[in-house]
Amino acid sequence: MKKIPVILDGDPGHDDAIAWVLARAMPGLDILAVTTCCGNQTLEKTTYNAGRVMALIGLDVPLAAGRERPLLAEPIIAPSVHGVSGLDGPALPEPDRQPVAEEAAAFMARIIREHEEAVVLISTGPLTNIAALLLLYPHLKNRVRHIYLMGGGIGHGNWTPAAEFNILVDPEAADLVFSSGIPLTMAGLDVTERALVFPEDFERIRAVGNEVARVTAEWLDYFYQFHQKLGYPGAPVHDAVAVTALVRPDLLVMRDLFVEVETRGDYCRGATIGDSYGITGKKPNVRCIMDIDRQAFVDLLVKAVSHYGKGAGA
Ligand code: RIB
Ligand code: CA
Image 1: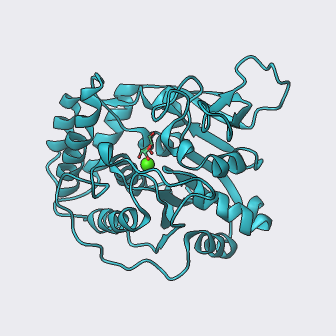
Image 2: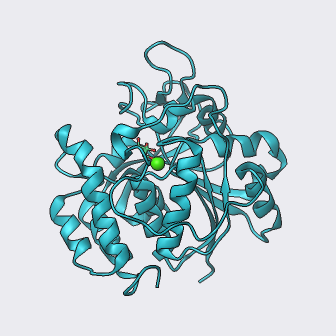
Image 3: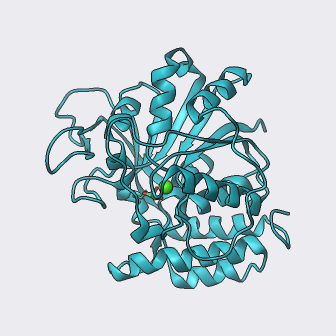
């Protein structure tokens, strides 16, 4: 079966890292590149973390660092969730590659231009780089086959009561992407807070016994600390749902909605407003994921870490 060409864009971040472990293990994906954005931590830290994750999982593709800051907004980082490094917890190998000289948007544009077919983007952080790509290279829009993104929430936020972190960090970027006309699948909090990996699931992953499995379990151990304090029964592995939407949509319940991003407002900036009842009369622009087969999702993660043989990245 023809592989799907994919670029991974994110802000690792524990759940970004787990999403990339999953993506790398999927035989149907042809990962062309990794790009990083500021979000969970500064660009420097997310790029360093991306290099470490890529070394761990043996992802031998180019890495490009994105923009130092959101399009207009002041940066927001999340050390309370991901730690000062942005990927606190288990020791990781040092990066085995330097980022390319080009900034992520220019690099994505070159990859997309040179690839013989349209490319899928999987975004697991703020949408800054993708918005920059669309702003700087609008003629390439039709060469982006689909964007699978973790972000938003039709019913609620997690960084403010109204806004989810990825969207809130760069609402202007999100507004550009959501109004681009490119096919979008949104893994928002509606589903990602149901994509819970329970502590007993951490042990299933750890028991697989290879280096990637051990590190993934320790990422979950760390990531769960923040969520456990909030009363979650498990770790919501938000970003891995964006990959799951591409490789196993059968595990998901989705509905097409017209969604717009609030870029103003004192209380609602960064909210993703879904027109659940068709009140606006506007055509849906987003496929929103609303539910997930949690057990099957965990089984997919266990299968993914089993892909990596003994020793890192084998
Ligand atoms: O709100 C969850 C999102 O914010 C995830 O992508 C997580 O990595 C953080 O970036
Ligand atoms: Ca992320």
